[in-house]
Amino acid sequence: MSMSVQFFGATGEVTGSMHLLRTDTHTVLLECGLIQGSHDDEARNREPFPFDISKIDAVVLSHAHIDHSGRIPLLVKRGYRGPVYVQEATKALCTIMLPDSGHLNERDAESENRRRGRNKQSPIQPLYTLDDAEQCLDQFEGIAYAEATTIVPGLSVTFHDAGHILGAAIVELHCTGDDGPLRLVFSGDLGYRDAPVMNQPTKIPQADAVILESTYGDRLHRPFADTLEELGEVFESARAAQGNILIPAFTVGRTQDLLYLMAENFERWNLDRWQVFLDSPMAIEATAAYSQYRELYGVELFDPASGRPRLANLVVSRTPEDSMRINEIESGAIIIAGSGMCSGGRIQHHLKNNVWRPECHLVIVGFQAYGTLGRRLVEGAETVKLFGDEYRVRIQIHTIGGLSAHGDQQDLVTWYSAFQNRPPVYLVHGEPAAQQALAQRLHDDLDAPVTIAKRGQTVRIERHAH
Image 1 (cartoon, rainbow, N blue to C red):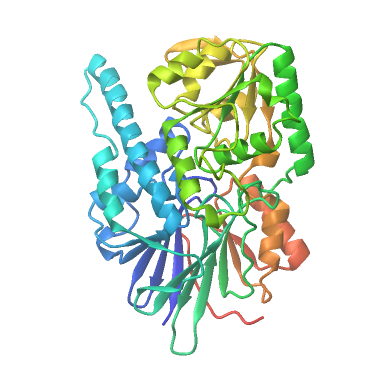
Image 2 (tube, rainbow, N blue to C red; image 1 turned 30 degrees about the vertical axis):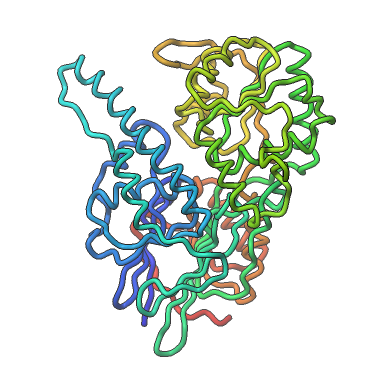
């Protein structure tokens, strides 16, 4: 039996992950992610899928982040009725994240239709609704790590811990052929070697081909000790200036890392002087999922007696009223809120109240995609528009690269180096500069046969003994 893969998403960019795997008899969709970024980028989500949905026999998903999972409700809305295979904890997280995405789509459509109404334009429908997202979850099937599962005749999947977020998986696809098996390994998103909560990514010794993410393929994260020192300095200088600290954090992964690190460094960072607000209903639910699947990581994130996060002065802000009360605080608040790229959510309300205040600090702890508000702030925008009003950017901005949930160039090279037979490697999920730098490093250091995947490109998986 032959096997090929065609690349459709996250080629030359870091969102919209989507690849098509074909055998002689079946077709499997690997990832079905939402395109995120500018208005024009996100408009691409409405385009027809670049394949016949009726030919898809199964979907395999590496993890719950919306840039990997966020178009599954749309796929189902447009006719897909088959299974979606995920790691067990990913299923739990998607139960939280996909309905939230549907709700945001409804809200965005309402906002756009008000604008269209003023301009006498016809209204649009949401990309998909909360109900669409909830219905698609019936098709999810959870699989434990290291458990080979046949998904279509002749093709099995095994998930391995990717160390990225809870339930994140390296996807190993095993195709049975007449002259022996073929093995394709997809990295998904790989974790950082110093990740505070998650385990190290699993090393795999053999493959016939590898699909590798390249988000940070052109950079090295700072040593983790320096990251901890830098965070402590931010807390100290913000306290001395009598300002607030805003942390736009991805609700899954980064938020839990921050809660753990604040508990571990409570005295060192003098956090007793602060109130820490977790201002994201979805992050609160995701943190509960981390509690449910404690066996998947190796640290004590929760108090064994109460089941709450160990951070003593944590205030959980569930309701909009809870969130609005935070805006009355001028000093002494650390506000962890979504979205992680400042492209929506409660963080925008906190920016409205603090971005013009030079005594306040904005701490960026994750990748900011091109076209997002977070990216514009990191790149030094002098003004930003929030809720129709223009604000001068005077807040102090810190980019803490060492808290990334993505491995850096060294992590990616180290992970690939475990393949003893040096299989062909195809780079996805990275901007062009990052991909070119990683390709050069893989070639120079490991003599890897490396290709930067292009949209629409099809490659045949051949047996690779080396």
